[in-house]
Length: 163
Length: 422
Figure 1 (cartoon, rainbow over the protein chains, first blue to last red):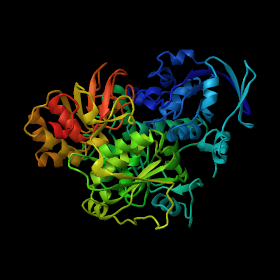
Figure 2: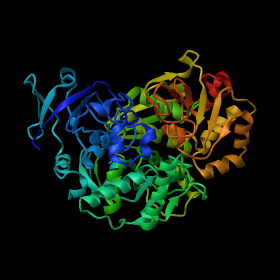
Figure 3: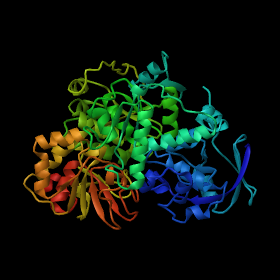
Figure 4: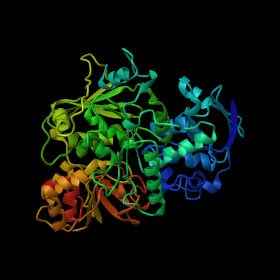
């Protein structure tokens, strides 16, 4: 899993919250496939139809702020999102994404968000911490995962991680 | 070490921890509700498919459950979730399961203090982001997702990164027209909705000493809206007497060392603050009430873990006594016991006589789930904690967050108004 490729979907807005990622009325839903249909419904009701398995989400800062609902990373990951790239993440969303093994929360510079465009194909090298834009050939850095987070990611989530 | 650092050190059997340390801590209490509970059960089902069978809870006596989000059951799906949760807690020997319509029950963050389930110095994990609330008792109270709660139920431990602490010193006497809600909205407006991301928000100072537990809980409740890992207040005489009325259980409180290190200290002169609201669509989008241009509302909502504690209801009733509401007004006490106390004090009569509807304890419309959700373009002034797009209903509805005093004043005038101006 050193390098993964995917098409980026850009929603360049700060503070995209969990009520937007997965609206409250669906909190009673626990079927992953059903949750996928409502991913990002608060910002783009057509989101789920645009995503192919393995795609990336590119957003503004403090992504996933708000509630602790694990429905949020589950909905995104079940819709096909493999990684979210953002300048920063709200802490519970980040934790849920990693510990549940749903998707990779990747921290990047604000400037990188501005430079990347919707629909571009990216390659993420999470060993070398490099993002490559396949179209332009240009590379960007990403913040390395802290040691524990990296280990949990390699275990596929907290379940198989042994302290 | 700060109080947060000392609780983590004790729970991880270390003599010292510093911000940035990543370690496993032992857990004292774990909570889940009718949304996170079925989510946790689902995690166990997924783990079983991966070959890890969940056999027993590390300690069922340290786990408690409440039904609060979709109660009374809003439809077949939520009814089935509640049934599933009930069967599960029975199977795994959880005795403390609060059920609506069966004695005491209410919103999780209210029961945690109202029934003194969580005690000072404890490590408390809740399957809900506003778990931070309970830090007002001097506990380390942290909100987590389903996977982490499942992990804690299985192992009695969880990994944590030791957070740095932001210290908010609140000085001066709180004027009567001001509530803790105005203070925390002012703070969030200044530091931003990610101003405390991954960090602790600790409150201290002269104002805190004289603040009731209910008001303290409003401060810690909304640390979540600044992204904080936890909110905390050192236990003192107010904490002691609050707990004395509620429990005989022994506890060992923790206080900070005199030389504790705070990454930032900010002082607020409370007597200079003004009644404040958060406008749509962010808890950080604040305005002083008197600076709002005559904002008409369609509805006033007095409910939730943030704004339907006994002191909140008292404040609202003080304004509404003898007056009629001009807009649709809903009052939902945060727990059955609070409903009963409010009734004995005559508050429920005041609400009903004003024309408001009084409903059962539920998270209900606060999270847009049911029982009074907002229509397109409907404007609500609310004692709750979030006003993101669609939070309380239609994505084009609007919620203004305010103190119970401001919400009550708005209810009887039909527009958002400073309680001094009615």
